[in-house]
Amino acid sequence: RGYNPSVVCVTAREGSNKKVSRQMQQISTAEFKNGMGLKIKDKIYTLVEFQHVKPGKGGAFVRYKIKDLRSGRVIGDQTCNAGSKFDSVMLSTKEMQYLYNDGDNYYFMDMETYEQIPVPADFIGENSKWLKENDTCQLMYADDDLLTVQPPMFIEVEITKTDPGFTGDIV
Image (tube, rainbow, N blue to C red; front, side):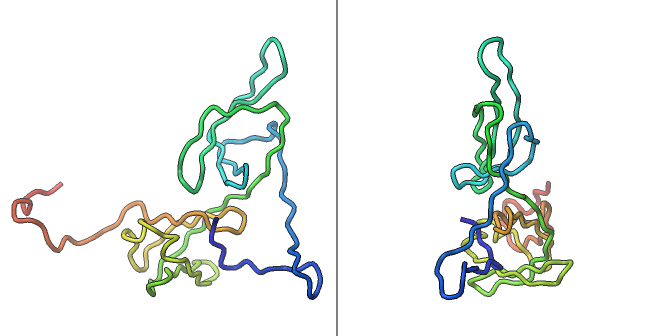
C-alpha cells in the first residue's frame, strides 16, 4: 500500500465511523493510451502497450501488457473484450529536494510550495544508499498515494578507501 502523508479521514456525518469513498473514474479499452495508470484488483499498473484485435470470427478483443508500479514487474499478453471497463488512476511525478534523514523518516521538500514531506525509511528501502542531502529526486504518485522515490540518475561521490591492488584502476 502506498504512503500518503496528507490523507485526512473524512466522515459521512458527525460522529459516524463510515468513510466517504471517492468515485473511481472508469475508462473503456477504446480510451487506452500507453503510459496511463490502471487499477486492477487493488494493484496499480501502467499500460506498457496494447493492440485492438478484430478477428474474422467472433468479437473484437484487446491484447495488452501492464507493469506493476510497486514491484516493477511487467505482465505481458493479457486479453479482455473490447469495450471492457477499467478503473483509471492519475499518475504524476513531482520533483522534490531531499533534505535530511532523522533515522525514522526521510524528509523531502516540494520545490514549488516549500512543503516538507516525511517518508518512512522502510518505504525508501535500498534507494536510501543513493540519497545525498540537497539532491533532486523524483517522487511518483498515484492519485494522492506515494508509489516510489527515485534517486537522481547520476550522483557524484568521492572514493575514500580502496583495496591496495585497485588504486590505479580508473574507469
